[in-house]
Structures are given as C-alpha cells and as structure tokens.
Amino acid sequence: MGMTCNEYRQGPPAGNEAAKAHLAQCADCREFDRSWDLLREYPAIEPSGGFFRSVRRKLQPAVLRFAAPLAAAAAALLVALLLTHPAPPAAPAGPVVTEEERELVENLELLQNYELLRTLELVGENGSPLIEDKK
Ligand SMILES: [Zn+2]
Image (cartoon, rainbow, N blue to C red):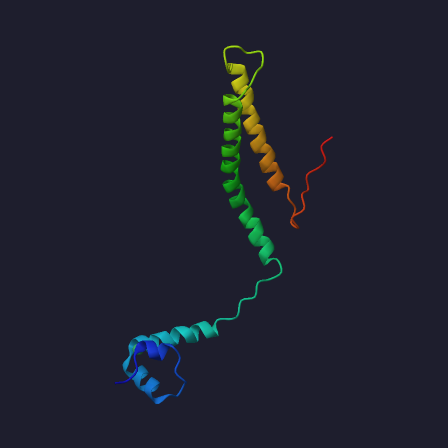
C-alpha cells in the first residue's frame, strides 16, 4: 500500500493525498524535496558575454599541451621515414647518417615544433590566423 519513493519522486501532483502520506513517513523523500527547493531558489545562471571567450582562453594552454606531443610524434615519424629512406643516389653502402646529419635532423624537429606552437598561439580570438607574412 502507499506509494513508493520512485513513484513519489517521479512527480505526483502536489496536494495528492498518497504523496502527502508518503512524505509524512519518508525522511528520504523530504530530503529529496528540500534539495529541489534549494535548486529552485538558486538564481538562474546566464553566461555573460565574455564567458565563452574566457573559457576558450583557459582551454588554449590545454590544447597546446595536447598538441605539442602530437607534433613531436609526427615530427619523429617524419624523421624516422627520412632516416630509413634517404635514397642518396651516390651512396653505395646504403644509408649512412653522420653525427652532423643527425644533429641537423633533431634541430629540424625542434624547429617544426616551434613553428606549430607559434601557429597555435597566433590564432586570433575570431579564429583567423595572425601570422605575419614571411618574405
Ligand atoms: Zn520516499
């Protein structure tokens, strides 16, 4: 007999006798009702004009943290491909990578990462790139 907590919480019409009876003997549902009352009292939250902009600004460092390792992985892959397929027509004994060449390639990777970070940082608020023209 009587109504279950689920039935009560799924919204019986206010003033319903069965609902009142249930509430009278169920502390859990009284608590449940009070939570809803508190929520209703809470002022409605409207995002201000600058809200999305500030969210985006806060997200940007996270995006950079995410993008940098990706760029490094992509650059490493590229370097690996270059090292395994150098295809030098004059080299008879296959790919030989000197210390100098390896250093150059490592610097290239750093340069590529730097370029990417710069690109990401220089994208404007409206999404348009602010990168200055290279001559
Ligand atoms: Zn109940």
